Amino acid sequence: MPAWLTVVGIGDDGFAGLGRPARRALLEASVVYGGERHLAMLPARLAARRAAWPRPFDLAPLLAERTGSVCVLASGDPMLFGVGATLARQLPAGELRVLPAPSSLSLAAARLGWPLQDVATVSLVGRPLPALNAHLHDGARVFVLSADGRTPAALAELLNARGFGATRMTVLEHLGGNLERCIDGRADQWSAGEVAALNLIALECRATEGAPRLPLTVGLPDDAFRHDGQLTKRDVRAITLARLAPTPGELLWDVGAGSGSIGIEWMRAHPTCRAIAIEGHAERQRFIEHNRDALGVPGLQLVAGRAPDALEGLAVPDAVFIGGGVTVPGVLDACWARLRDGGRLVANAVTLQGEAALAAWREQHGGTLTRIALADAQPLGGFDTWRQALPITLLEVTKLADGADGTFRASGANSTRNTSSTNAASGINPAICTSGTSATPADSPPHP
Image 1: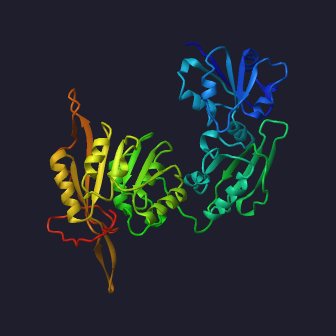
Image 2: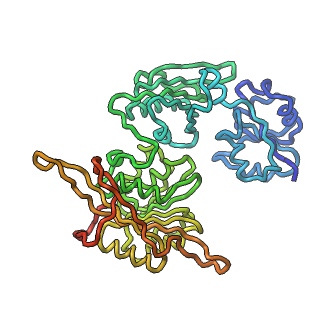
Image 3: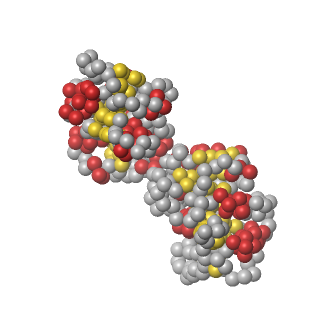
């Protein structure tokens, strides 16, 4: 089918700033869709019917137009956080033609002299403000696409709260148009109030003393999370995430999520990584909501409930982590049944009962078991000694299809993964524990 839809990128300079192909497409169109601001830029001589986007936004009326020549107006480059990208996910490439204009990012980079490839980009259009938190690093440059004229003031407040009050903010209004204007200042001295609705914010991040340092590697400090002790501790978390192996676009189930630390760090691994946290404890649900915002992944989905019942209807996962509930009947089997072919399941246990459940499940389904033991050097009188943390048993298994019969098997069946350590001076090293390690059962064991 030939392209029936043309998406025209238009700047703040309006119809006069369009190239010849874009003008011709609009002049020949039978209908033009767009926002009211964009439609108002069209000259009166244009014969096409003008159709403003419905509220709430819906593509259905546009997609029903598949006859004649249809145009859509979009800001700047339609494929950059724009309707062009949305349409490209729903239409075959042959049905869609895109004629971009310079994006607001390109114009801002040109005004400021910033190499565009060195600048992170965050869109707050239809997205919560805490999405910026993942990009706050001392010395980082960030372009923020504002939701409206109130975004800069809200952003300055967030920067101050996060210890980045020294950040230089540059608000660029109406880029490329007659009303273009630049407002510059520090976040901790910001007083501009509401600005033009059409604006972009450029940030040169500067951390003040005491600002949290959140590295991009897995294993954030434990105090980066709000929790009640049900937390996969830093070093165990780093090992667990290495086994889960997040890659772009994948979905994780974090079952018995506790503080949400595994799902949060999974999503921080790449902007397209997705996670669902399943947690039945009301206070811990509030911890997850706080932590996902504070650590810059507000898109983490929270399911209030307990596995296996709470798993019903959830999207098929690429990976599953079970940090709580391995002894609950049906949890391991339900997660395994829903896991996609090629997906990874990792489960941690700290009690003897949990370890027995993992060992029994492995006897039936295969996989590898790892014992993780950590020790920290701590004072003992005038000397130092090793203080052992509770050992963790980790099950790791990959779901592989056997072939034509559609049955599944596990990788690494009936094998045990061995690692070794020398308990170096840092005192933070994984090690294999020998049998005979004692543990005291508890009604609510620490979250492994």
